[in-house]
Image (cartoon, rainbow, N blue to C red; front, side):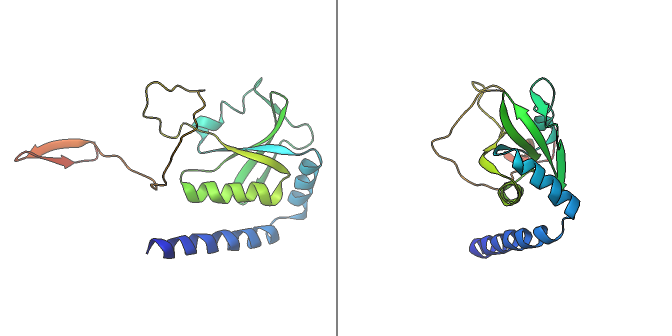
Length: 163
């Protein structure tokens, strides 16, 4: 079952890469060409607005004078620089599939020399703080987890609840 799901995800990515190229207007693709003429860029892939908004605030983020953003396939790609490094910042949403699709869009459309997936990644270690860079020795794809707190118990058994 898991292998079948992976095959479906791969087919979806291939389909999206083919279809997306055909569905963008000449104006949008012209903006992409202007952006690429100033490249290469570092791609910053961010999961949500909570983590993206601080990146896009001055003086951290300097907006590109030619094209400040472009909308492609439901995502807004913000073009500029952070600390003299040319970047394209895009919000991907939650989950591995959104990360894969957004990263593929970066490589398919833009002159990218690297990608950084930026975010808190659900830190559970109180020794790590916002702004710390961590590189794990190992990691696992576990999907999206919805944590539930234990609630009342019946006859010594803990029950899971939504609170």
